[in-house]
Image (cartoon, rainbow, N blue to C red; front, side, top):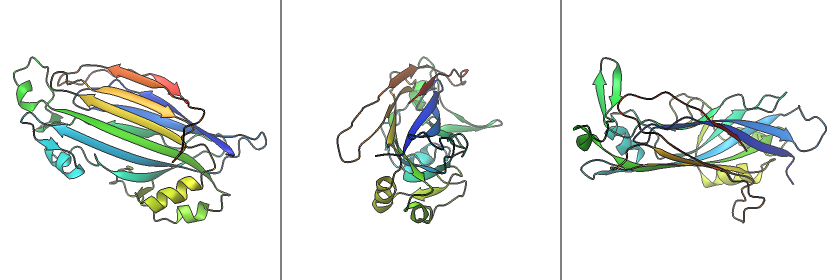
Length: 254
């Protein structure tokens, strides 16, 4: 039985076009037992699995991190990566010290201007649209759990060789490339429910606006059936042209 409950609150920004989107989330860890409810010591670990595919106007397909990075003039990196990242929590509240963001810039070609690199995203009626249109799909899964500091496996997990450089998929958070053995060690030692956050983004030649589906499943049973399923889905659609639109927000808690 878990000693802690792991939940998250996410903020979904209005998606832009050609795969541009952002979902920002924060974690909360709570003790299930009444004593010492505010003394939360440990770390949250997320296993991220991201896959992306984009097709250009000439039907060329890009489905690796390197090919997509080249196609987007080195703007979009780590588009097809599996890795782990660590979130520290405040002892007094159990809230994560850092927010997490599932996001992507537009998967299209970029133009160098005096203002920097700007994506070739156009209205469908613009004559340039047929030259620079893309279609594609992005899928991101985040599998999450809490590891208490008094867990017998805590020191072993912390010694796995985490990297803290900024130029990684985890963007400065402690980062670890994926291995099956690390996944088994981490999630078999979980002191909380295992929480799955899934995001899917699609767009087409006919309609370049990003369509985002986001859902949270908790608890998620690895290798078994899902029990006590908690599932929510949001769908937001917004069309945008070359100029980015004003952001609007909605929040959900799981």
